[in-house]
Image (tube, rainbow, N blue to C red):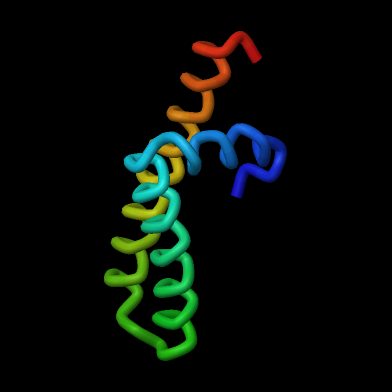
Length: 73
């Protein structure tokens, strides 16, 4: 996720516990969704998890953009 921001993500992971929490939850949901799809879980449940994951991705992206702006990058 966001490979073009690798350096910023590294900085945020080192300095922002909230960012780490969001980033890890996003990755956990990614794995969960893969498993749910493999196990043919109800599509509505999968879609709910995908929406949750997308919200987290938006939050992570917003934090990256704010970091860039705050640090003139």
